[in-house]
Image (cartoon, rainbow, N blue to C red; front, side, top):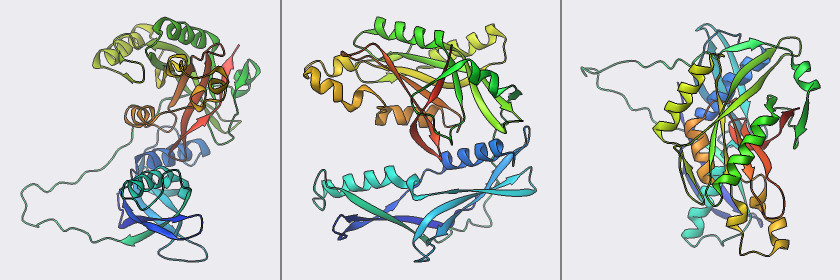
Length: 338
């Protein structure tokens, strides 16, 4: 994959004064995964075809021009011949801007809690040439796995489901049966003051008339051997062994679609007044840095989802969902199958 540019963020205060400039090391894999999935959903990539990333190119600002950006473009080669591309905005750099602002706070150049704005730029970087007489020269070509997708009717699933929180038009629909929510809630109550969780399995499906790919979660496999405490959950090798064994025993051709875990908010906020707990940001749609790291590491596929069971002191257990959108983990909606 060709990437001939070094990317830089410039941070500004609200009065437009410059805070500083930060070179960034961009993790491109989520964007690459989203570009492939976007091509698959839109029909530019057919089932069974492979897509290889050719390059990632800057999209220069339409008014200012080079080196300022309004986004970037991921270029794909399909089956080694035809070409397609997906565009991304500067939102992809949002978390990198937050990390840069934290560094400036630590250096005393920015006040903690101060609002910032950022712009992005790209500059050509020098290519390092490998010695021609090396005995260890080799070429690596990335081959993305082909997703197993089966035909099904999106309309039939819609007729028997209800939306859970807001549905974003750019997200592939996800259908989760009621027993999965009930099982997750029961396991969450049993775990008490510790986080708990499991793996969501099911199928990727396509409705050709609707020109859409959607996910059907069929079951959750509890992570009985996970390492957990009040604020974190770690999946051990034993968890993955058990999940693979369960999938093989079920013999339904299911795959891992994502994961779920609990947030024992009633324990996190037990010292807080009830009024404050009701407004607490951790009570819903909260996905920690640890959660994001696990999702990025274990479930980088653009279709992968995460479900959070929120155990609060002021309500019964509620659920929030998260997933990839344009290569960024965002809150999303799902459908609960009746």
